[in-house]
Image 1 (cartoon, rainbow, N blue to C red):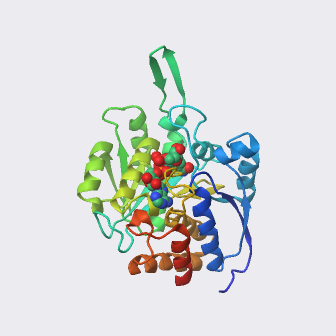
Image 2 (tube, helix red, strand yellow):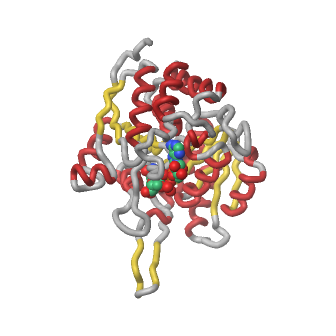
Image 3 (cartoon, helix red, strand yellow):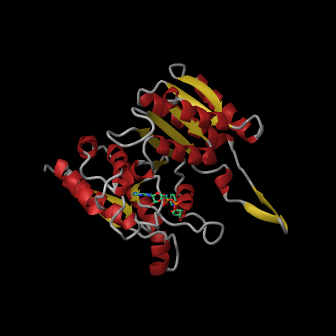
Length: 337
Ligand code: NAI
């Protein structure tokens, strides 16, 4: 296989649970596709705590700053107690303000709908994910939702620019401004202002609860959706469910300087270490990464290899209704390359 001309260094955060298994699989497939990448392996998550005494070592943040691009496996976050989410911390510290989640049907995947092709653009740095919570008096806690004109305008610009660059026809802003009149109201005002600058792209708005129902009834009416942080988080998993689940859903966190590519799924502790994880979600995130660094031909080749494996339907992991291991599906994708 022909190797690409220049070797790039990219930070690799393998993460926790199934993270190392799917990350190793993706590294092998990218090498087999002939892309020369030097991986700077950097720890984060519970594994990092064991080695370095912190869940997010400065080495890891510095590595992403130096290399500009990272591929990241999932990291575990304790629920309701313990340390704050590392993924959220990385997105904030590196100003990765746009979370891009393409939702596209894959061949032969058992799902409710076929031929879905929509894009979720989620604001990644504020909203209820500001993590500003405190106990007012015992038995009463307050959680602050921060919405700013700067971040709302920036994410709307990203969504419209993405739509224009990728031949998309419509942007839908999703909100709850009927109830949160000030915060979601500001988000909406910013979206409307940006929409005026893009007369070539249709713009509409949906209240978030209705958007959920419409996605189930008729997902084809959507093209690009732009949402503040929490709605984006929930709706992107809902959309992953429309096209066959978490095992294949890719994602990217993009800022002006840096980008981290990671799958939508978590560390899947129930199947960790069992060679059962589906590497396709992280692999499709790596495809977005290859496109981002200008390795379009390899990205296309890997995408085709995934599609061929799925079309043949012989080597599928358990989440896709098969019995194959991570190693076997990785081998099958490499064989198709
Ligand atoms: P999860 O995504 O880890 O698992 C949900 C279900 O999907 C499980 O049954 C799991 O086995 C299955 N699954 C997930 N990925 C799969 C794959 N690649 N192949 C086959 N099956 C797969 O979600 P959960 O259980 O809510 O979270 C577990 C941990 O992951 C938590 O600590 C959570 O905070 C963390 N998490 C981390 C994320 C990140 O680092 N970006 C994102 C989401 C969750």
